[in-house]
Image (cartoon, rainbow, N blue to C red; front, side, top):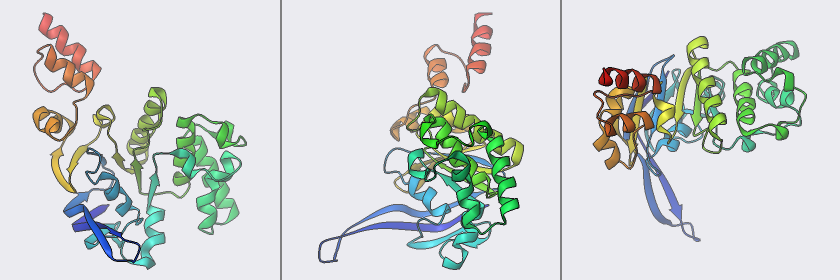
Length: 277
């Protein structure tokens, strides 16, 4: 679905006269392959390059060197940009930045309408998308009256209406309360399992990644760790070197001396019962 081939990206800062003042390498000779239908979580401390990586998938940024392919389309080719964005939608950190219409229905319809979709097909897709995320009954309400989690669902519905093959979530829960965070992560997993949509979740919250197929940990524009959640979180010392904590259940299990890499509350309870017996 997504392929990075030796990608380097540099942020160039210029002075008032237009001369190069500084160059920051955000991605450094990065190679990465994400399969269709996979759920991949990308972790990293601030400045690790994870959000820069996300913006390359949606062609918001283009490589300084190397190549990014999305469903076979080259993000550096301007002629492919529309095709890429129809296949790979993005949900950003602040839902208010993606809300532009007066009602939920109009906001969800914005993408399909700009694609020039016939009205009947557009309405069908918009209705399906709103039902899919549980917002159909609120279709005539103002998005600005919704909770943060519901606003993110409006953004997700707008992407679903374009029938994407991939959705990139760029720290979508950073501004939400615990209930909102659970709502969005559960929605992402449901879209992956039931609809086969490739999910790329950029996050700093360890608990949100335990259900992923694969975790990629970034450091200074490179991949520092990669593997299943159990493989990655079994390397607690390395994660701490990278400025990250373990998931709460994993940390607690280690503190009370339980064996193995425990990821969930259910695993913790079973391991604790076994230890007591």
